[in-house]
Each structure stands twice: as structure tokens, then as C-alpha cells.
Length: 195
Image (cartoon, rainbow, N blue to C red; front, side, top):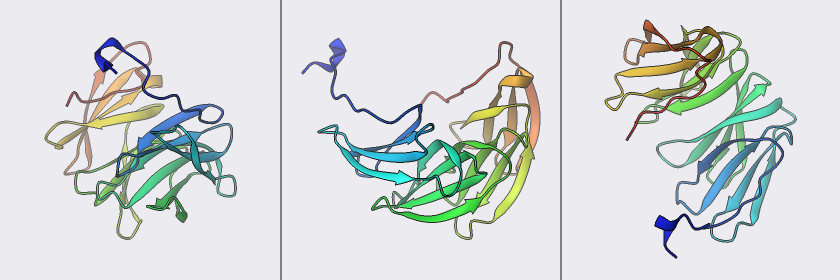
């Protein structure tokens, strides 16, 4: 198989309104948030088969973001209409539920996994959690409808795409303070740092 020619490696069918995807720590599986089905599914990459379905309905609606901890021993999903995070262990069992600010979406860990950053659409903030205690450290003001964000390569700053206020907000990742706003027209939605 020549991947340079764009050949299909595997087809995996998720649920309704697939929103987020993340690889398992060992790279053999993929976790998928299915917004309209109110679940997170786990699929085997080699076969494409469904391995597990994790219902989130008891905790809130519309699972959106999903991230693996840098340590590889757990995953975190965001429930947009539940104001919650769900913590899933390495065996894909729902282990813990954590309350957030209003309407959580995008997620990212710092490099060591000691802090989790959560974009809050309705609160117009980036909420920071201590991943040992799962207590909220701070809500950093952003702009309107901030869904996705990225760290700069040295992790000293965070860039947040804020679609409804047509801007990218720059945050000091050490001091946890908003530094400035960069005007970006036409509703910026996603942002990523080139490796």
C-alpha cells in the first residue's frame, strides 16, 4: 500500500454528528465523540470494529472534545450541554465527572499533563484545571464563541480562535492572563500550531 497516493487505510463508522477524535495511548484504537448519539465510542483501527460505547447521557448532552492525557493513562471528554468533563480510564471505563463553566468545548493538556485547559463558549473564557485535584484554577477571559485553541511550540502562549468576536486571543500560558487580541475576520473557528 502506497500512502503517498492517498489510498484508504481503514474506514471507521462513528455515531451521529461525530465531533472529536483522539488516538489511544498505544495507537491501536480511536475514541470518537458522537454529539447526537450522546456517547463516546472506541474503535479498533486495524479492523474498524466498534470496541466500546460509553454513554454520556446521564451527565449531559452533546459530547464534543476528547483528549488523551500526556501520561496515556486516561482520556477527557467535554459535554457541551452538561457543563461537565468525563474522565475515562485506560480500559475505557467512565471513572469521574467534573463540573465546568458554561458550555465546554475544546480541550488541551499542558505538556506534563498537570493542567487541563477547557474552552468555554458561553462563559467566554478558557478554564484551567489542576488534573490531580480536578479543581478549577482560573477562568481566563477570551472572546465570543471560543471553541478551539493551540499552544505555541514553546508552550509559553496559547492562541484561542474566537469566531463570534472575529479574533484570535493570545494568552500567557504561565501567568494565565490574556495578553492581546488579533483581529481575524470571518469567524475563526479552529487553530493549530504547525509541529
